[in-house]
Every structure is written in structure tokens, then in C-alpha cells.
Image (cartoon, rainbow, N blue to C red; front, top):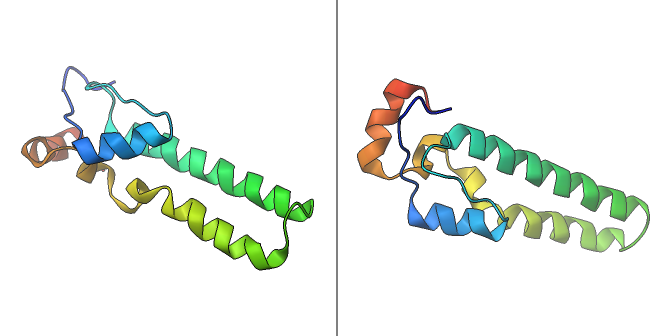
Amino acid sequence: MSDGFLFHYRPDVLARLWVHGVQPTERTRPELVRDYVRDLYKYEIRRLRERYLRREFPKSEYWGRVDALRRSYPVLALRARDWIESSTAEDTEVHGVD
């Protein structure tokens, strides 16, 4: 819970989150959303590995697929506090957003 504090997510971050079906509200803490997206990424990596182990595609394609999956989650390269607009980013340091 955000204790009444509103988070204004950057439009580019919201667009990237929407690709994965993630729609945080203004009351959703960025660190919570980032943890969720990270878990989704880890799930997809595990699923890709399982498919490789079932020989659904050759080893020569594996690293390319891993790289493509990693590139589909560019928001994970940002800290949670960088997901919100800069005018509110300074305020969130007080509220414990990573």
C-alpha cells in the first residue's frame, strides 16, 4: 500500500509494462510492480529453458531466444524509482522506493 501517496509513472514505462499486460495504478508502489515484472521474466526464462530441454528447438537458437526475451523486458534495466516521473521521484525517496 502506498499510504495515500500517489505515484506518477513515466509514460514510456507504462507503455513497456502494458506489453506484458501490467497496468499499475497511481497507488501501486513501483518496487512492487518491478518485482512482479522480474518474476514474470524469470518464469518466461524457465519456460524457455524447459522447452530447450524438451528439444523443441536446437541449441544454436537457445542464446538468441534468451537474448530476445531479455530485450523484451527493458524496464528491468531501470531502478524502481526511475519508473516514475522525476517530479515525484524526489518525494519517493522519503517513502522508501528503491
